Length: 384
Image (cartoon, rainbow, N blue to C red; front, top):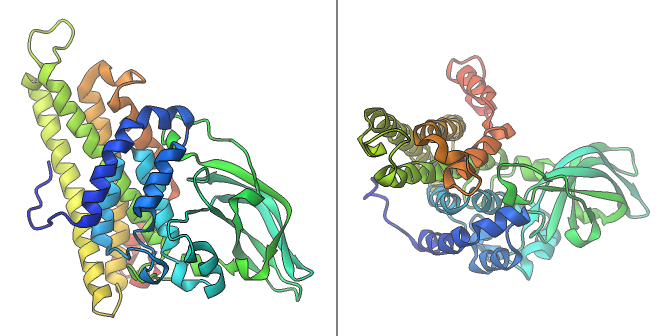
């Protein structure tokens, strides 16, 4: 239950909710195919849902952070994998105005709906020779690569003059060899497969320092990608947890537990547990939105989110992910054996949220970093 009369709907949220119906209808296919069905992915691109954070000058929406959170949450409530993919695409688009103009125009100039996927590198290197970089390596966890147009392959960039630093080679997806490596139980529909390159020539202007992606604060939010990924995944977690709560409420209306005589909704432990889950979810969501609204206000006045706002955003996003996991666990337990079946929504919520909480952005160690900053051991600006 959302109590937010002071946060009315807006055009992009209405659109996200409309497409959420289609996303939910395609959920079985998404799980089976282990990717967003191609026709659905194309519709989401055409609708502009992958360009919510893309700067307006490239045809994007440049949506403020609180509105972005609500859109990703709405999509994830329909299917966590879809929310994850739309969020991933949006975060990369946030860096468009920090790139070389030629490269940004190649990606989004003629196709504002273009999607860029990344991936985790394993011993990857790009060496400059004859006016281009030769890219070698293998990348895993490339969420959204099946519907992506481009891939941002992280690697050590070795220049002809000996300069070496960590960066990214932006390459058309068609230029790499896609593998599989995505046999998982949670967030199956993200299609987070692997890919490899063996001596792929990359034009120099498509090889960029990692800071362009990690540190650049885009026009939409004034925030770097790390905090946006955390916020996006926190929004996905909230969407998954919301679905779990609503599924339990629906289940309790008719279920009579084995060897019992009363419906689940009459069980006092279910009543208490549900109320606690609702409070946990609502508190985590309100905290995230409140901090996001502070960040958006500071960005709008030209100062940009300060160290305190960024620190609290990291805290609120981490809390949203961890709390969403706890909420789903509680609801799953209250539902009894129904949730163990593959075709039950609670089974999917359980698997998806536990894939999410294993991601690096959700690790509890982020609480330590925030705590050190709040205590003055580290500066507020050190939290990212």
